[in-house]
Image 1 (cartoon, rainbow, N blue to C red):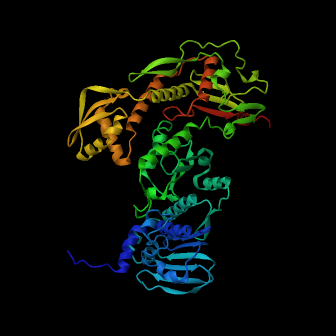
Image 2 (cartoon, rainbow, N blue to C red):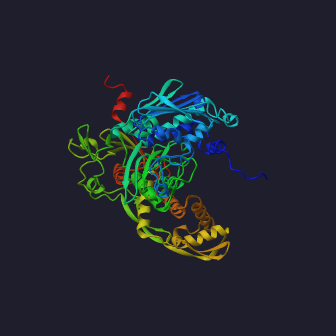
Image 3 (cartoon, one colour):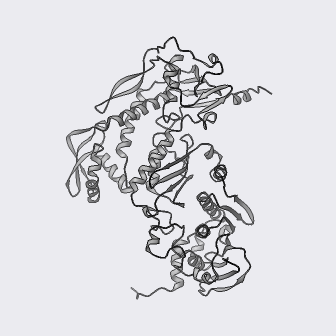
Length: 603
């Protein structure tokens, strides 16, 4: 073991650079964040050879006073925090004062800045801690030029990827920052070619244009905008409709107080909100902005500041989950023809969205009748399909489009005209042809009714005939004791019998017959990993989904026109009707214009 010595400034900077500057894109991230903190409205990034040869960031921000430029290149020098109170409520993207010194220690760095009347140039080269300063010509703002990154640490340079890969990482970094500040213009040049030019957004439509460039037209066309606010929290942004999903989680942008982060609590809440509308193995896309009190979030928990810690993660989870779940539920029959307004005039017909109740269309229909079912020992009334043919009163006035006179309201899903292969309902509305998967649609209707009934009746626990012992680690047993009262409210009752064992005495009645030991282990594992668990809720919903699947109208069942019309009306009143419980679509539409185009009519 060698003698303890104080590291030299240069060596300390290079060690710090290993945390702050690991690739060219991290240099760009730190420099652009400094520009944003300086109040820049126009930021231009220039890249050559994937950032290994040149990285230049130019802005029109406040600039650095001449007597502070050399100080800015020293380690732990910053204008963003002064005392502990500032650290507890950080408003800026940067705050540690390590970036410039770390970058300068592994590159040839030139900084030109103008704060007031004159500009000054500072130059630093890797191991040389002496910084030269001289006058220069420059508009108000700052330019930082980084050449030959890692030239003095060949081992680090050897681990860099190809030029194309490093550039793609830089481009992705700029796009993440551009989504955080719509009011700032961003430009990116690669090898003297302009690759990205994003004008500052002055209105919502301009924001959508930037969103299209970064996330693609398909995402924007299938996005749901949300804006929910409580006393101390606000979440806004865009989430994808369940019909638009990804094979991987590559289109997910989350910002907390303007900072791009990856947070397991919020990610878990989002996954939970999509759990019964997204097909297995698919991932949602989103661009979300969470605003919270600065003192309720700690951003100083990760070297690259990509992670945060919330003072109360359960409140954050509940708020984000509720906001997204509500937005998905309100995504009512999303269709280009009746997406934005409550009343549209299409093809001369008044089309009312969401106002057409089953009773208004069919005053005395008996197609959907209440049937008693037991849910885990609790009585439930769910929507059931009557086995016989439906009965309707003789005063039913409208049964198809031809019966309307141009003034009668036409429901969004129109009126049934036929059944295809005893599985699909063909309906005509004011814009074209609607095709409905009758089993999938009825499955969602029953599932939503089961959930609503279950929530109204509450949880009922059932004692186990023989209490189930579960061997766990001491850490898990301690966690179980802390969660005991909370889990009791969910119908799971257990005692701690030793330092490493728990004894389950009661479980939710609906979960009788399930693997009690595995359920408890999964709950504890979820809490350890995500600080929260919805395992009981997920298991209950899985059982309700299975009941809905088996209780819905099956394929190969012949339906009358009245039955089909009643199903369409029920669909129009049901939340999340666009997908069945497994995430598959329940209906689609073919506009008459597309049908005419296919048959070359009107040419």
